[in-house]
Each structure stands twice: as C-alpha cells, then as structure tokens.
Amino acid sequence: MEQNSRRNFLKKSALTAGLTTIGSIGLAEAIKSDLPSDGALNPAGKLPREVWIASFSQERLSAETPDDMVERVMESLKGIEPFSPDVVCLPECFYIANTKMDGKFTVEQRISKSEEVLKQFSVFSKKHNCYTICSVDTPAGHGMFYISSVVIDRQGKRVGAYHKIHPTEGEIKSGVMPGPLFQPVIQTDFGKIGVQICFDSLWDDGWEMYRKQGAEIIFFPSAFAAGQMINARAWKHKCVVVSSARKGTSKICDITGEELAKTGFWNPQLCWAPVNLEKVFLHLWPFVQHFPAIQKKYGRKVDIKVFHEEEWAVIESLSPDVFVKDILKEFNLKTNEEVIVEGEKAQLEARRKYSS
Image 1: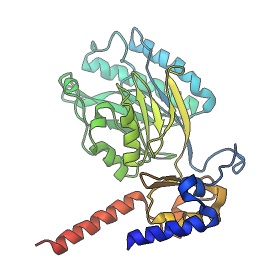
Image 2 (image 1 turned 180 degrees about the vertical axis):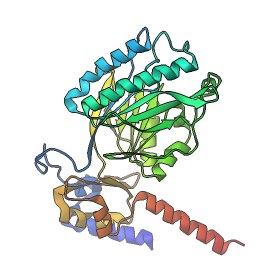
Image 3 (image 1 turned 120 degrees about the vertical axis):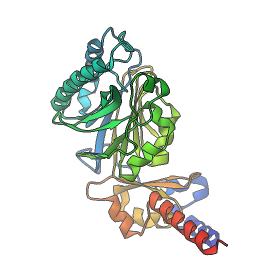
Image 4 (image 1 turned 90 degrees about the horizontal axis):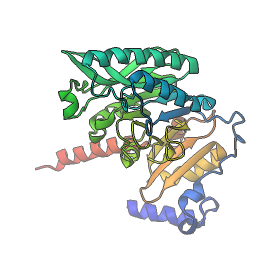
C-alpha cells in the first residue's frame, strides 16, 4: 500500500507545474525555492537565527612557552575581527600544545596556567562581544585534572564547562581524570550547545547526551583534525559540528554534514561561516507530498533541500517572520528524530504483541 502511494505521488508530481520532469531535473531542483540574492528578501542580510562561528587551527603554529603561544593565538585571531563572530572555538589545550613546555608541566602548573589563560580569554570575549570555547585543564581532585572546555560568554563570564569523558590511556597515566558520564547542555543567547573533545570522537555517548538535551551546535576541540568523522557526526546527530584542531584542518559542518568552512593551505589558522539554526531535518517520505504546498505558500521565505539517495530533506526558514516549528505543525510534519522514536515504539509493541 505504501509503495503504491509513493508511485501515485511521483506520477502525479510529474504532471504538476511545480514538480515537472522529476526524473530529468531532480526533485530538489523542482521544489527548491529561488534563493534571494544578497538580502533581496532580508534587507539586513541576516538569516532568522544566524550565528557567526569562527574556528581556529594550530597548524604551522609553534612557540617556546605557553605565554608565547597564547600571544600568537591572540594575534592570529585578529583575522576574524571584521566578521564579528558570535562564538570562537579553540583547540584542545592549545595553550601548551606545540610548545617546548608540553609534557614538562606538573598537574599544579597546568591548572595554574590554565586559570591565567581563562582570564585572558574572558577579556577577549568581553572585548569582542563573543563566546569563546576555551580548552584548558581544570582541577578534578585526588591530584588529577580534567581536560576541559570552558564556555565564556560575551560579558567574559564562565557559563559552563565540559570535561572530556574519554581521555586516552596515556592521558590517564599522566593524571587526567575521565569526565562525568552525564554533563548538562550549555545555554547561550543563540541556543543550546555541547562540547566533545578529541578521543570522544570514537564514542557515541557524549554526542547523544547533548542531542537528547537539545544541543544544536557541538564544538569539537581536538589534538587531531578527525577529517570525515566530523562530517559523519554532524549528519548522524543532526546538529552543527565545529572542529578546532592542533594540527591539520579545522572546519564547520552543517546538520547535513556538508562543510560550510574549512582551514587549508591558504588559510591555515582560521575559518568562519554564518550558520542558520532555523531549520529542521526530515525523513523524506511521506512528508515530501506536502512540499509543493509549502513552497506555494511561503515561496522564497522557505528553502527545502532534498537529498535523493538518502531520502532526507531539510526545511530552512529564510525569513525572520517564518518559524520552522509552525510549518511542522501546519502541515503535520514530523522531524527525523520523531520518526525514529515512533518507529522504535511501534517495533517494540509489535514484538510484545506477537512474541511467543
């Protein structure tokens, strides 16, 4: 029955004006709205929930001491000043990485120096009116320390912290304490965020912990770049992921896993991009049937992007007066997460009902 419904829909769609020749030009091209050029729709040029994100890489950056490294990082960050980012992400324990003191500090020295670094970036955040994801070492008791990322707000205040859940065996031997298995999401003025650090990339628990709490952006300070793992985490968990690496590339990935910005040969230290959080991830069927009506009503105010082979869709508001939650309610659409939850519930009920 469902297959017949799909065939009938596709057959009818091919005959309608809004979805002509699906086979040749593709459903995405047929239903995707014409994007306004450079603020034609929005004169201010600002998306509904636009967040400017900047990330940093320590590639090609070395120093004698932590103080020298912080000075070099601060100098490099001047490159993003014209873009006035809302949030800046720094690599894992960047203050001591790539310095001649790496591996030579005692636990007490690492914690003391980290406190100095946090004070410096509190001044930075307040001066530039931005949040900073600042990865340092914090006390854990018992003569041990956490590898942490402290979130500093626009006023220079510390509003939250994440402690690395999965340190390496070598880090544990050097005095690193694994962080708590549950850590609360961090609230900012642009939405809820989370952090994962380096080796955390190999486990799902921390990523799922934050998504279940509603995090829309997860920052990833790291010692290594993680490559396509970052893209995979973004689409798997349906959130923006921002990596900041000591070596290799740092990047910003949208909820689909697509790269919005990335460091590289010609810009080894910095990347930045605006991200619109007013969007939602859908499983394509059966909701694709409503897409022509949505486009007819909202036109350029809404963009619908379809991924044919994966059968995904992303609905994004391009207008300050249109909210995705209202579209979902109006057209009785369900998010990808809701579809999964309801599917698992139906599967569980079927097993209970028909199990011997």
